[in-house]
Length: 233
Length: 322
Ligand SMILES: Nc1ncnc2c1ncn2[C@@H]1O[C@H](COP(=O)(O)OP(=O)(O)OP(=O)(O)O)[C@@H](O)[C@H]1O
Ligand SMILES: [Mg+2]
View 1 (tube, rainbow over the protein chains, first blue to last red):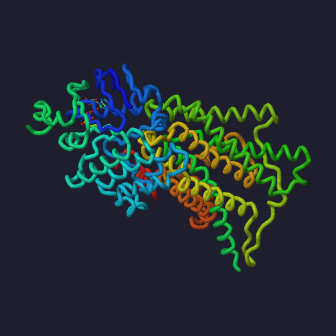
View 2: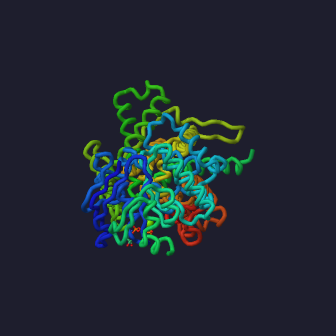
């Protein structure tokens, strides 16, 4: 479904991605692991069109994405839940969810909103509250729910566990798995390698802008390098 | 009833009229600031374009002899609507030509472009009117039905013109409120104002939303321009300068970027100015006259900038984060 090949991305003179390649098949959860600054967020931003690659290609089911505007990429079925949640703090929970559905022609927006409320009942209780006043965990739920409102085929998640208590992290990842079981393909970026490898099918390890390792998640858990660098030995 | 009370009431109405006019113009400054964090100093000329569209249509009606025959409500609707649409489109064109190419440039650059656009538009209107009418000082034709007054009780009279300004402004403000708060596009405007990058990730076409924001702000300014002409009659290409600065003051007073704040700031400023104009010389035994009223507006601007730069209702600073 997603095919990324030899991606090179620069921030002015900084060469942030130096030839990253990976793929995500329909129905998979694929995780990108890597230390701080490895280029994970940069990769997701390039897929969703916020950054332009200088070289390389991003293909979605055969269609080239590089060069398209972010809002056009959303329309093709890619939703990006950004690092740090980035909910709109002075919109209500309900309004935040509506922004997620912007690209769609009405239709079943109400149904989808109900579905988000089933996944995250907490959001329903707080639907009229300003999003900026939600707790960190609730904001993450809102960010994911808002992404789902676009009815994506491919969901990009950037560090959904950041800053959350372990119990909330577990809840969120259970929900991510059930979203995947409903047929949404997921590309997951995580610092928390243990949980990312537990829920994903396959993984890639990035280091300073390069893919250095790839494999089935079940195998990566036992890989020495992964164990040393990300799982604490 | 005594004279003092009737004067008080008259001043109050004048202040409210002025206040709503400032409020309508201030919305253009504040909405554009909301999405781009930049002051569109050419907005005062967008307002003047509205005033000139109004006068041209009315003079056209007059010249064709139809002004007296047409229903006054119809005439008013036509001029207000035309002023609104043409000013809105002018604001959109301005964004496209003078600001969009400078997106991402240092903050000072579009500001200078705005000041340049302001001068350009003033002299462009002057040129067009000079060629077309041989004069750029124009006056609105009198509409007899607007010259009457509503009597409230025995001592109080409210001119129909003032009622027109207040009623039109209220309708526009209500429409804007519903648009911004209840529609999908209105929510998108607020999302872009808070975080354009994330808005684009939601599938919101940010450039189009910014253009639309200019249209809406310009439309409000255009309506204000027509109302200004109908109420005060005399206009010229430079008529926007002082009201524009006052409306900008109103926007800062209410909290730049904040829509209800712009309305509140406009009303407060209009009232302060009207009361200063009438009572200053009484209160100071003639030492200060009505000509000092403008000092108040700008004294308020300076005090607000020093003591409460976020304004009365302001909280908006985009980088405040989540
Ligand atoms: N806007 C920017 N300007 C310049 N350099 C940047 C910018 N954003 C990221 N970088 C650099 O690009 C590299 C990759 O950053 P990126 O944010 O993709 O890392 P990451 O893998 O997501 O890290 P983390 O786990 O800390 O979120 C880093 O060296 C970073 O300093
Ligand atoms: Mg990151």
